[in-house]
Length: 75
Image (tube, rainbow, N blue to C red):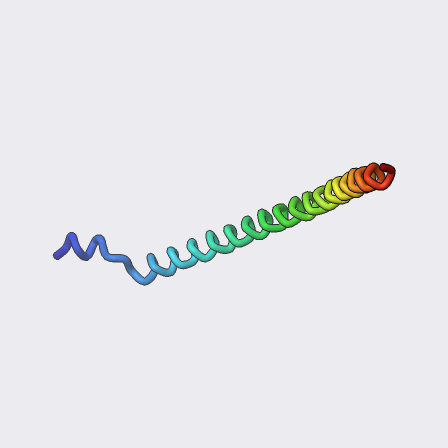
């Protein structure tokens, strides 16, 4: 019975554990917030880069299509 009593947690132990967990959770939230903001920034930069390349691709496609149309109309 005495060995069981030594291994039981007291109210103070539980309160300390709760405080530790609370501080750990708040630190994780802060880290996740920073990570998410960095990911959003990178996604925005990638989105702008993709849009630029899409316009370059579309201009090339329009040019190629017009060249083919003019070749058919010329004959």
